[in-house]
Amino acid sequence: MQRHRRSTKSCSGTRASRVSILTALSVNKTRTCVRDGMAMIYIPTEDQLAMARRHVEDGEGHVARQEALIAELDRNGHAKLAVEARALLTTLETSLRLMREDLARIEKESRGSGDPD
Image 1 (cartoon, one colour):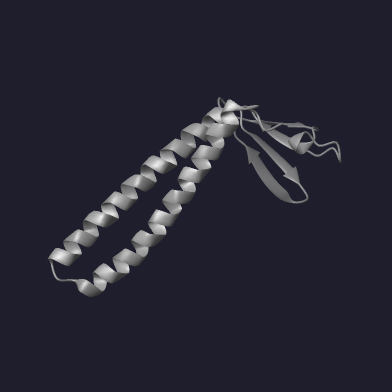
Image 2: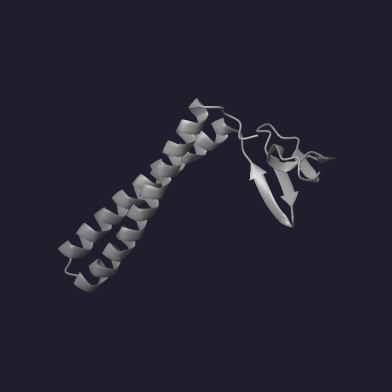
C-alpha cells in the first residue's frame, strides 16, 4: 500500500494562500490538491494524452456498436426500439465529439508548455 506525503505548496502555482497538498508517491506522480473543500487531481500531460486517446477510441467503439444495433433493430422490425436507440446514438455522438475536442486541446497543450503548473 502506498502512503501519501503532506506538503504545503500552493495549487496551480498561485501565491494566494498556502494549502495542503497530498502528494501521491505513485509511479504516475499524480497530485491531489485540496482548496476550499474542493479536491483537484493533477495528471501529467502524457497520462492525460493517453487517457484522452483511449476515451476517443472507446467512444468510437460505442458509436459503431450502437449503429450496428440500430441496423439489427431495423432489420428485425423493431421500429420503436430503433427510434430510442437513435436517440442514444445522438448522445453517444455528442460525447464522442466532446472527447475529440478534449483530445485536440490536450495535444495542443502537450506541444506547448507541457505541465499546467
